[in-house]
Amino acid sequence: MNTELLEALNILEREKNISKDTLLEAIQQSLLSACKKNFGTADNVTVSIDPDTCDYHIVAKKEVVENVDDAVEQISLEDAQKIDSSLQVGDIASVEIQSKDFKRIATHDAKNVILQKIREEERRSLYNQYFEKEHDVVTGVVQRYIGRNVSINLGKIDALLTENEMVRGETLKQNERVKVYVLEVRDTPKGPKVLVSRTHPELVKRLFEEEVAEVREGIIEIKAIAREAGSRTKIAVWSNDPDVDAVGACVGVNGSRVNTIVSELNGEKVDVINWDENQAYLIENALSPAKVISVMVDPDEKAALVIVPDYQLSLAIGREGQNARLAAHLTQYKIDIKSETQAREEGIFEELEQNYEEDEYGELKEKDSFEEEEDFQGDTGLPEENPEDVPEEPDDGEQNAEDTDGEGQDAEDPDAEAEESSGEPAAAEEDAEQ
Image (cartoon, rainbow, N blue to C red):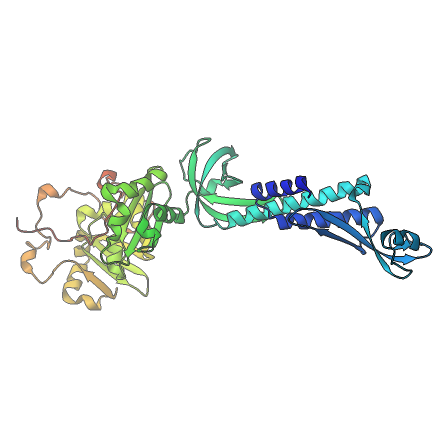
C-alpha cells in the first residue's frame, strides 16, 4: 500500500474539495506523460492505479523478437523469457516500468501535470461552489479598498464590490462584516471572479427571506420592490393565508423584524405595504404614509391621477419627489398627484360627481361620497375638519412622480413618515361631526 500517496490524496480531497478519482486520473496522466517524455512514445504503455491502496503499475506492451531494433516497442526473446518462460518470438510481453527509472526532466513534467490538474480542479470547485450562491445574499468581511472599489472576503475567495454597487455615503471599515448580494460569478483563467452589490433591490428581498419565516416558507410573497439605496425602500407584500397578516408578519412585534433589516442596511428606511390586484388601491398603498382622497387609473397608458388633501401634498410627493417616485417604480404607473384645491379648481371633482365611470382615466377608485351634500360646507366643497388637526401647507401646483428636482416640494417632515407603513387603505374623509 502506498500510504503516503493515499494520505496526500485524502488531505487534498478534504481541504481543496477535489475528488480522489480526479486526482488519481491526474496521476495516471502524469505517468503517461513521463513515459512519453522518457521513451519518446507512450502508445504501448498502460497505467493502472488501485483506488483503495494507491498502488500503481506502469506496463509496456512489447513484441518478442530475436534481434531488437526498437527497444521501446520490442524485447529480445532472452529477456522476455526471464519475465515469462512460455513466451516465444512474435508474442507480446508485458514489461513493467519503474517510475524511479525516469529521467529528471520526465519526472519534473509529471509533477507539473499533477499540479496543473490540481489547480484546474480547485478553480472549478470554487466556481461551482460560488455559482450556486449567485443571486443570493452572503456574509463577507471587508478586506481593503482597491481604488474606489472594495475587496470583500467570502471565505475561500475575495469578491469585488465596485463603486457603482456601493451605497452612496456608506463607509465600510476594514474587518467589518457585511451582507452583500451576489450579482455574478465569472469563470476566468485566474480563478472565479465574484461581483457583489449593496444597492440591488433583491438584497432587501433576501434579507426579508432570512428574517421572516413566513416569507421564507412562501406563506407571504414579496410582489414588488422599489429601492433608492441608502435612503428608502418600499416593498409590497401579499399573504397566501387569510389568517396571516402580510404587513404585520414582515414588520414583527414592535417592528423587531423590519428593524433588524433596517440596521443591516445602515438605517435605510423600509416601508412595507399591502399588495392589491386593484391598481388603484395598490397606488394608494404605495403612496403611504400619505392619505389619499381618490385614485383614477388608465391601465392602457399606465398612468394614474391621485388627489390628496391639501395638507398631505408634500407628504405624498416626499422630499425631492422621493415618495411619489418610489410609488411609481413600485406600481409601474406614471403617477400625477394633485391637491384637493387644485382638483376643484380644474373641475375634476365636478366631473367625478357627474359621471366618474366615463372619465378619460377609465377606472376610478372613489374614496369620498359626493352624493351627500351635508358632507360639504359652503362653496368650497371641503369636508369639515378640525383646524387644530390640519397644518397649513404652502405648496401648490401640479406634481408628478417623475419630477425629481422637487421644486418647492421638499418640505416633507421626515419625522412624519413611518419606517414601516401598514399599507392599509387610507381614510380620505375626516369625521365632519365631532
